[in-house]
Length: 112
Image 1: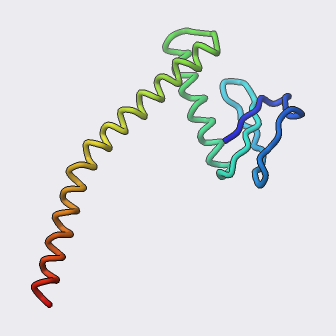
Image 2: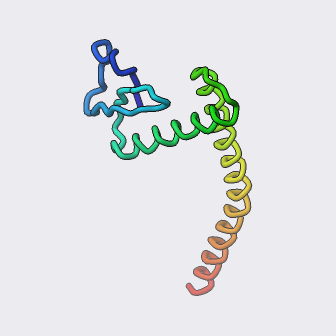
């Protein structure tokens, strides 16, 4: 995904085969160029906007840069937590799948 602030469009070159989508995050407009669906990009923008507004409300911070950094930390924490949970699930799940495959292979060998 490539982003450029609205108004800087003359300096912005879109990659071939992509369309620019105008999104708004925390009262700032951005032209985003990506192959993703426009609705998906707007959903991402709403998500980030919501996180930034929640951080601003919780911290009573008005500096948009600080709000953006704190929101990014919040989102990164959520991502890392989800990755850790996924890792905790993948290990046992992989072992169960391998055990099932071994049982199926054994059953196939016995039926031959």
